[in-house]
Picture 1 (cartoon, helix red, strand yellow):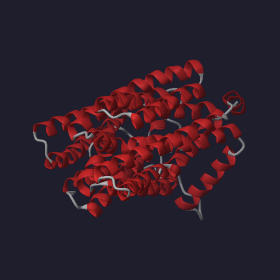
Picture 2 (cartoon, rainbow, N blue to C red):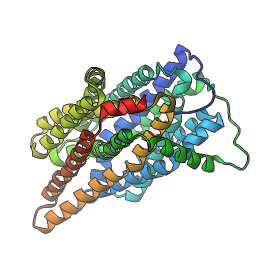
Picture 3 (cartoon, one colour):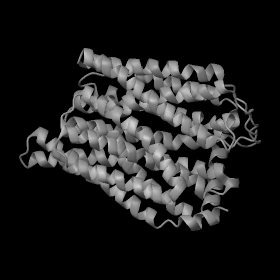
Length: 438
């Protein structure tokens, strides 16, 4: 949630901005290795095995997302009032790094351990982002936020690629579960080293604000939410956009959270191949963010968003029918290009449709709304993939074939979220929304 601290942003040094960028460099390495390329497939295939692995992975992701959805408004309030964003950021970053490293101890059959350690690491990772984002107004003026945020996104993507290449080299030398488990330790160290400059170089400028008598962070958080909802409800087109976003964003999260599992189950990819696949996705994601940013500037946010959603839908439908591993690489390139376009342009739409005087409130609402719904998609996908696989197995299919058929059927749920979200987006009147915002 973007900070609304009373103190105005103070000009930052080049070193402070680079410290902020480098944190994203390490932060994205965690996402690339744990969420996207390695741990998800390792947990589903090696730790659990079979269709049940997809169900439990979806449950683990959903639990972590739900915890952060509940706590993020309170965390955002603490960030604004404490004047100690860096200390909270340090705590949650430490949680993410430590528990990322402890994933090394998760082996075949350690299902509960594998879920618990991942859920705690994921809560740390997601919660740390609240405080990391809250530092943006302290290092960039409102006019510079888009550029600084974009730089962080691009440098962060590069961090994911670098860490994946390191892990790929390790696993290529010795293809074993031990090397896969060591990759989580390497990722934790990579994240820690990249995060250190922020804690040494960046000076927090906003001072602590006094909590009014008779109040606490909980009451203030809920009053803020009430005020934000009261402000937003009068902007009908913005509300329509948020509803569309909640639906299609779940489709995007489903595709991200289960990409490695899809590669392993449907296309028989080994860990090295999954890492190469995710490197391709990361590279095309950076290109997509740049291209769709320019498309949005030229043709409008809604039109750009529609194009990126259609491309993402094409990638999902293509995956449903694709049978070859080579084809899956091309699908990954297209999906990476499209999904970052969806994410970056969605953020741009919020900026376009928000009254300037209330931009922080609208972005706060956008962040809270996104987190609140983010646990639904992964839970739906995991449940559907597992139930469908069990049904096919009961009809006489082998376990392997049943699992593949279950994943293909679950793909349709991603398409359903994207199609419904796209349909809802078509009803958003961007021109009217801009007029209302002014």
